[in-house]
Length: 204
Image 1 (cartoon, rainbow, N blue to C red):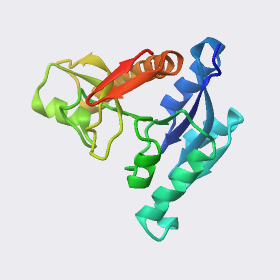
Image 2 (image 1 turned 30 degrees about the vertical axis):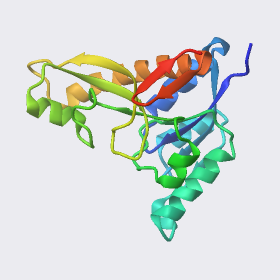
Image 3 (image 1 turned 90 degrees about the horizontal axis):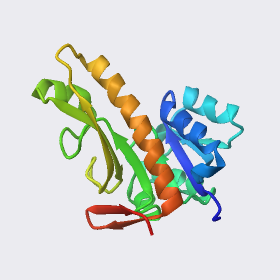
Image 4 (image 1 turned 120 degrees about the vertical axis):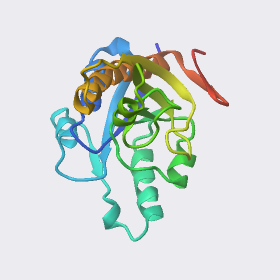
């Protein structure tokens, strides 16, 4: 049985997706283990979750670095120190730069609260509601230099109800997102994956 895949998880807030991954990784059959958690700010629940789990953490605030490029290099070095097989953005609210994306090309995952390529950017649930779509959802993708443009790993569909507001829709999307993230990170860890142009194929 191969060793579990090593995950570094990046957070900016409460860390509910991180917690879902930690819970999944507690089962040896899951095939992955979180080895470190990084953040772009102090004092957040995501870091507290990591510390309660006994995991090493690191924090790099953009304002503590002279340039965005130096911040990007610092985050890259901290991630590399833990030798991850995958880096997972779990609500990490900063765009990675060229150094990071080169170091972890094809191995940096993020989720988005819409069915990409529809409604990229910061307000996926709001934009879906305003557009009047009947279904939206969540997307797991491999990060590339664009904004929410990388190859898609998986998607989960969430119906839009007539009485939804942004908050209620976003909560249902987040629940679907957590399940999708846990399922497919586990599959990628256990079965391997290939990024071939726009397509991501899970399985060796």
